[in-house]
Length: 88
Image 1: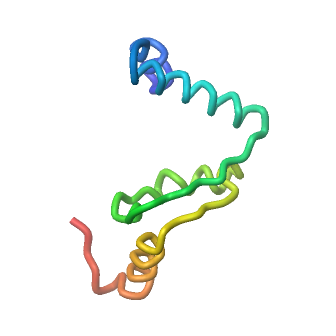
Image 2: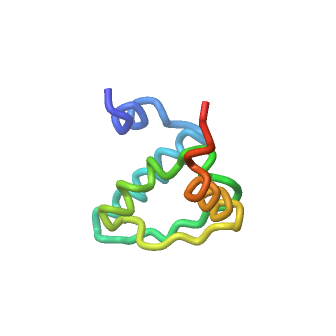
Image 3: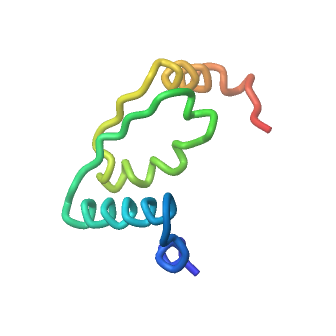
């Protein structure tokens, strides 16, 4: 079962229903050529969010990003000190 099928089958009420409607709205928006300007707060690079964002950026769906200094600081640290840094 795909994620879309799962959401369509089981996300009907309360917050789950809102997630379903938001996902449907976002899908329609992107299918009609809409572009996303993403805003991030906090250290999202720790969550390895980039792995999810890169395909959306490469495909032109996300066309701009605004973020707090925490994201930039951590990415800069990983870029300059990556050989001395390990992730568990």
